Image (cartoon, rainbow, N blue to C red):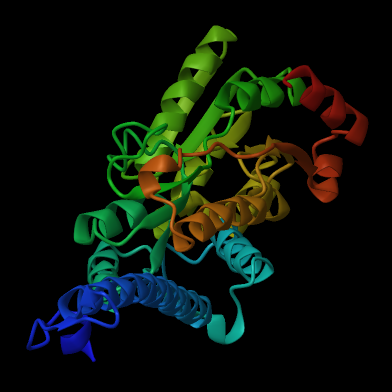
Length: 364
């Protein structure tokens, strides 16, 4: 068929006297007719082929989408130490992921806790790198630093990090450039020192307790000392390298200060029950930077809720899981700070709920 329609010539060019035209001309007219028919058929076939290809591609796309939707998301978690604030952030992160649909068989966690050990941070970071997770979560500054050092290829979100820029986690918090973003726990240190002064106006010396190896605490203590000086008060500072050092540092401070302020320091946070006992025994009030610390030793705070911090961080992780580039997700500040009080401690140190609310309002 294709040979005939391609215009193959027929043999003989005899004239037909009865018809009055040549056989050659008759053949030529027929060939033209069939060529037109074939051109139309070819167009139809090409159109059908194109439609078929589009359908096939669409089917592949739908199959890929379905595969992506059903794929188990792997999430690595590296937490610095077992303490209430960080545990709350971990809990909030998982709860928000579940709320966003990542639960059960749709998500697999590798949840690691370094228990405050730098060696553990390094080995656990290497493990998470080998896991080839969809996204990793680092809870606290040292954990984030260790994880980024070990693996800058897997997207990372961090939480409970005070100053990500000074910690080397990003060059620009507004445009993350190291495949890491998250939510800071930077509190209003000035406001909290003012809050402490409002609650205990007779206190002339404020004690500060922290771990000098924690970059997050160094940043806060520097601000705290400046603000204490501006109020015409004296600052007394003691450091604790480990939780075992906290009791002695707290007892020394209690003998020198009229009130103690604890920043969002992980070492101090892990030893809050000890600080609480010293506070009660020495009758020196403690004001803390976050809500979880208040429950164990503090009188009150205008601080952040770490469970909410974890939830806020999870929302960033979900965006990354769904394809957003880390560089397009700016580092976020805590959504809000709230007044949290410890009624037992307030009664012990003669502070009423009304006084706490007035002090909190004064520093808003």
